[in-house]
Amino acid sequence: MSEGRRSFWGFGRKKADDPKADAASSAPAAPAETAQPGTTPTPPVPATDTASAEPKKRWFSRLTSGLSRSSSKLGDSVSGLFTKKKLDASSLQDLEDILIEADLGIETAMAITDRLSESRFAKGIEAEELQEVLASEIEKVLAPLARPLEIGPAPYVVLVVGVNGTGKTTTIGKIAAQQAAAGKRVVLAAGDTFRAAAVAQLKIWGERSGATVVSGEQGADPAGLVFDAMDKAASADLLIVDTAGRLQNKAELMAELEKIVRIIKRKNPAAPHAVLLTLDATTGQNAMNQVDIFKKSVGVTGLVMTKLDGTARGGILVAIGAKHGLPIHFIGVGEGVDDLAPFAARDYARAIAGLV
Image 1: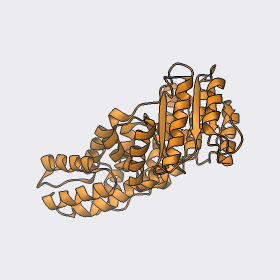
Image 2: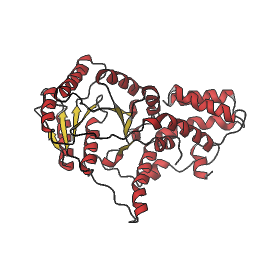
Image 3: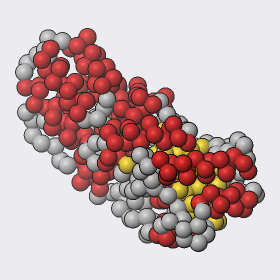
Image 4: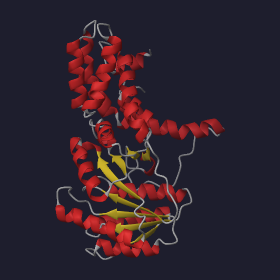
């Protein structure tokens, strides 16, 4: 076991160098307004194998850095449990409580402690072994849910929903930039007609990515705007519909969202082909409630988890996955276009467990 891994979770050893600081030194921190959508960082070495590996390495570095607050908090809580020579019933119960408090969910917490009790009861345990068990059980929950967003027959309609502040418009801009860079003809519908800043932001992304933006007057009926956007997207590959942020407990706002869905179906009974719910990782358990409401109201088909770099509660994605079983299409760990990437269960599991 390497000294770096041993020291990540303490266990009486010297404190490891801050992984967030190390990763951050190589991670781009450009905000969305200055990011260049559709670009791919140039690998430092032109060799083919290195070129294909470098983007993944850089993403894992950003992911590890972004999740360092979550993994460090979990590690600090766990390390004090294992000063004893043997793993006993009391320490296993304490571990289960810590995992639940870390938002990993009851089912996952019990699976981890059950596995340890079967293999390590009354025996000593090393830091890396515990991290490997944690990563393995998290990956087991999330691996079936890690599905890229596949764009079907044109025009493919994606509706993006969520509460205020979850990063819907930014997420739409990043997806549009990535799809446009892949050669797709993209149309964006500025359905958040109540917030001028959202429309302006979407137009900036449209200009940079080459996507067409359909917008209307401030305060205009969002459903009417979406109706027009469906017509203008007839010859496009992809239509992404932005919506106003709404509290999930406001019935009239949810009814308005349902109206938008009805309008889309009037134009194309098979649409929307995907309904993405953006979730802010910093809200923890509240994100679980949001999935419940939006799933019932508009038939959410997949999730995007944003702001994993701004919280110590990144484990909530595990609990949401275990309960709802919805596909997880993207996770975000920063402002730049390359800081939104398709969800990879193994990378996420190892990062949150501190296996760098």
